[in-house]
Structure formats: structure tokens, C-alpha cells
Length: 283
Ligand code: PAF
Image 1 (cartoon, helix red, strand yellow):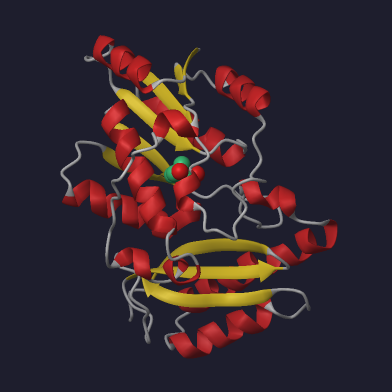
Image 2 (image 1 turned 90 degrees about the horizontal axis):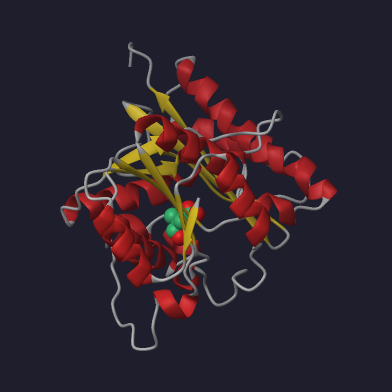
């Protein structure tokens, strides 16, 4: 596995691989089974697999966990090697955003709702870093987890709007056996918070089952979901919503392809999760 840290080095590498089918998995490191499943999909579809590891300062708010975000450099490199990654790109902040960096990429509508309310600068940070990465790697396919569903839609939107010639591939969320969606931030959870954290996926699962069984009124389903999520003290729900899966508009009646979105706080740790569901035919 080749490791490149400079932009110039990556550009030279890319020119030498003009005819390859490139699969790209952008990450912030602290790799877990979720990331590895993205790499495996890239490995299956593409002749050359590129992974980036870059903890992107632009997507963290001033009070967020940028400085304490986990950076297990050696074990991440080892995992990439074992997963058959061809190229690992891991630039420094100074390399990626030189001092006079002045550009921002922004998706105006989709970025402002749900996660955008709690984290107003987050998606501009994501869209800016992913634009730069896609320009550099120029992959045929780039792989993103469904776990960050709003991020996935925001990325699809700017890729479409800016005519970037990369197919964005959605990969299923990987979960622990008790339902908790894998996330690099799960390692912050104390033992008692870890037990509570499953309430979020349990609430979403209830919502999915309710819709599948024919319930239609979003307000009623959302109330039941909230009851499940908050049955145990110590978890604060920020939102639990039934939305149109294509544009994240909140729905009053279940219909079409939906995504159930959830965000919760456990102390100062924030968790997000979501599940997709299709309305049954009789709706
Ligand atoms: O999902 C992530 O890990 C990050 O938001 C991403 C897409 C790598 C951009 O920094």
C-alpha cells in the first residue's frame, strides 16, 4: 500500500493511473467495521482503491471535539493494508488548507435542516473537503455510509449540481448486535451511556415497524418513538422525524420512500441514526 501525504504527490499518482477504475472511500480515520465495509465494496467494484484519512477541521464547530477526535494512525494504516487498499492519502491540515485558503462549497437548502440546525457550519465543511478530495482523486465511484444520511444527500446534491463525474454509492449502516450504529464517536460512551445509546435505534425500529404495519400519522408514530427513546433517563432526543427520503421534508402522513431520522444527546456526546422504509402498497 502506497501512502501519500502531499497534494502534488497525489496529482502525480493520479496522472499515472488515468485508465484505472478508481473506488474512493473518504474518512476521518478511527476506522471501524463500517469503514471497512465501504472499502470492501470499493474493492469489489474497482481495480484501484483509494482511502483518505483527514480529520477535517472545517466540519467541526468551535465547541466540538476536533482536538480530541481519535487519531489511531498506525492501526488505521494497518487496517487499510489488510483490507487491500492501494493508496492511502493522509495530508496534514497545513497541506490541505494553506494559510490563504478562501473557498467554501455550500449546498444551501439541504444543509440547513436537521443536523444543520445543531451544527450550522458542519455541512459547508463537509462539502468543501469532499469537493477538494473528489477533484484530486477523480474517482469513478465514491462510497459513503447511510449512517450519515443527510451528509450523503448533501454530497449527492453538489456532485449533481457541479457535474462532478463520480458515482456516489450509498452503503448500508453497520450495527452492533444490539442495534447501535457503528460510529467513531461511540468510543466516547461510558458503560452506562453505551447501554442507553441503543434506545435511539430501538425507537427508529419501532417507527419502521409501525409504518410497515400500516400506521400513517407521523405525529402519533413520532410520539411513540420518543416514548421508547426516552424510557430510560439520561438520553435527550434532539429530533425524531419521518421525512421524505429524497429531500428530507418532514411528512405528516407516511408515504413513498421515507427516512426516519434521529439525533440524541448523552451528556456531551451526540449520536445520530436513521432507517429507510417504504410505505406499504395500500397507502
Ligand atoms: O463521514 C465522514 O467521515 C466525513 O464527514 C467525510 C465524508 C470523510 C468528510 O470529512
